[in-house]
Amino acid sequence: MEKLFKLKENGTTVRTEILAGLTTFMTMAYIIALNPNLLTNFAVGTPLWHGVFLATCLASALGTVCMAFLANKPFVMAPGMGLNSFFATITANIVVLLGLGEDGYTSAFQAALCIILVEGIVFIILSVLNVRDKIVNAIPLGVRLGIGPAIGLMLMNIGFGSNVGIYAEGNGFATPFYVMRDFFGAMMPKILRDSMTGETMGTVGYKEMVLTVATMFIGLYVIVILSKKGIKASVLIGMLVASVIYWAGEAIFLGTNPFESLKTASFVPPFHDMVATTLFKFNFKMFFDLGIFTALTLIITFCMIDMFDTIGTLVGTASRAGMVDKDGKMPNMKEALLSDAIGTVAGACTGTSTVTTFVESASGVEAGGRTGLTALTAGIMFLLCIFIAPIAAIIPAAATSSALIYVGILMLQGLKNVDFDDIDQIVPVFIMLLAMPISGSIGHGIGLAMISYTIIKVCSGKAKEVSVLTYIISLLFFIKFFLIV
Image (cartoon, rainbow, N blue to C red):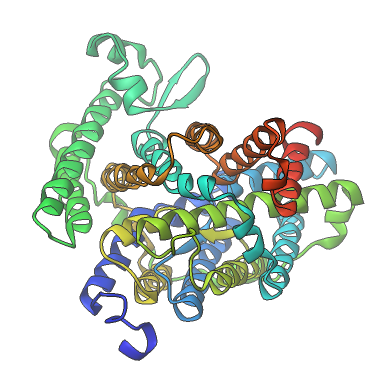
């Protein structure tokens, strides 16, 4: 272990790294079931759903193991949120545009996989040629310093909102429940309870909200208190405490068995479904039936979003872990980006949307993870989930929210490195601080910050301080945001 991961050099131990890997895995285990739900339009139990489920586990494991051995970094990969929703939208549009009907979804899915394959191959080439590394260095220092805190706000927004997985039905559609907006924003509890008129909610739904909020904060406080006592496994312990409280609450207040799903769960991996629906199932003919311009636009869009999502996650998380130098550069960035690209190709070949470095990796870093052993641990867990997915699925979202909120708060500390006396820095940074959590995209937040930085520099007579590559990146984002229709 010492020779492979240089534990002493990085000031860590085997025990710390394994705990950190488990912590990261638990905070992102939701992706195992959520990704196939999103990509198949919630067609749970179908051959396509099973294929995407296995692809999620296999591609996440392979990409993460590559990160462990090639880059020796504690970053974990899985199909990216946001990117998977975009992929599902494209698949649905292919069905409509080509008139495939309901039975044509699997064929459209196989056509959309072509985008992911091309994207991954392009990224491998760019990584080998050091182009992606140069793009990282083209991001202005001030923006780079602000990426970590912006991701922190994004994590907190996820923890306080969409991660809890509760939807209040009203006005003919379902909207996600946000703790700060819907629970604490209500004038009084009775108004909130009475406003929940959906058939699937009612009194039970309100009790579930209360249980979620209470569990989330208890878990957060446990993590904080244990951290103050210097316990490295504080995040993992806090999540376990929150899980136990939530399970008890389900049994006592909701009258449900939190382990009911385990009674009928299957622990046999449905490999035959993956072979039939997603494994190396690329439908290039159908993809190019959309037209060359549309196909290229989709590929370029995916490339831009994924590239800056990955760069932002790596830079932000590495900054929090003290893995960057005084210029904000991370050693082994090329290898980390290459691992990410390999994960994307693996995802395309097995049958899932873009595999990228997960922002939840920050939870493992906060638990003490500093080397590839953290990533290897999480990768092994993803592999085991082929057999134990039903167990991973019972981890309550409220428990993972506790960890996400805590890590988000800590990542905000990076703002102390931003020069608040320099308007050229703080304007792009604060735009990014708002853009990331609201848009839900790390890449879009960085793009807006880059555009802002470039415009401010040019209009203040400092155009020569902006690198050529920064101009190019800003222009590409400008075109993506305002000109591509």
